[in-house]
Image (cartoon, rainbow, N blue to C red):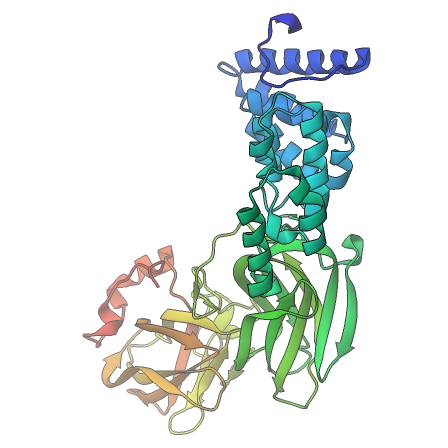
Length: 480
């Protein structure tokens, strides 16, 4: 064990009670011991961090964060940071906040996720500066975002201190007068991978007019980059809609615009991270009637990586699956979504495929929402040695269709790779034009975007038989 008196501390401490001194000594000693031990036993470091994570409270979190930062314990540092983010105003009133080192203090208050009103942050930092007269007060107070304070606060509270130049205060007032409310870099609550649009977090529906829009108010401003909506899906209806967000219910910005696209069931939407308190969903079209109906809504921040193009997701995984709420809306099969069940082995003359009569009918797949898609992967029925011809079309509204792959003059067999320029698609239509054996077009499996699998490696010799252009190209499915 290392004696507490021999530890080199970065943080300046105020007078503490014997209990506070004992707690800090115990914390430093335990972590210093772990730091020495972790070179040979990583589990010792993890278990110590986990132990202190379970003991966090308002009174000790600042001290724990300071020490965890000092000894570079990332898990404990992260947990302390998240705890303070969610309890910012309570942390301000704790004794530990006043004894934070300058480095630790700035790491905390400079984050957008440190969710407290800017005036409260200003007053807390001012109190801390008064208790730590030797610190660089100007550097600490620069953590305050002046444009987020009201004009009255800037003139009556900030200006008399002399910590900011008159030009800095005038610049803040200019930004306020010339910017829209949603242009400000607000702070917001951050709770990763959990929906905050719930009664648990105080969210409420403030308007539920199915004709003009549905509005949700969160308990406080929060950071999000992911919204999920469950559209009414008891039948084949599809909807178009847009989503707007606001901080004050006056200045709204549109973050999702699917007004020109059709979608159904679960909508898994991604967008650049932003801070807002109000969400408004406006239905613009329903294929069945004039009412826009939502069953559920989730709003959260996710660490999952995603790519957007023209406001639409560029998927890296197959989205034409039953789990992702895709559906086969045209075509003949013993089971509606046989094409999407991922079974590429169990099919024969009687089942396991979807078909349509040549010259009439088509096969149409509807992903749950519009995506920017480049590649598609098809398995034509191949229990006998026969070839097919076909073409592939896409649409965003089921009215206007664009042909993206023309294979009507070639003999195609088994696996087909269809790769074109990336474009938005809410519907994919496959139209058979020829069968060398009979008057029916059959195929077994569909996915988009194309994925790698052992099944394709086994069948690579049959890929796009008869097509000397797109069908014979083996492409990396992750370069969409």
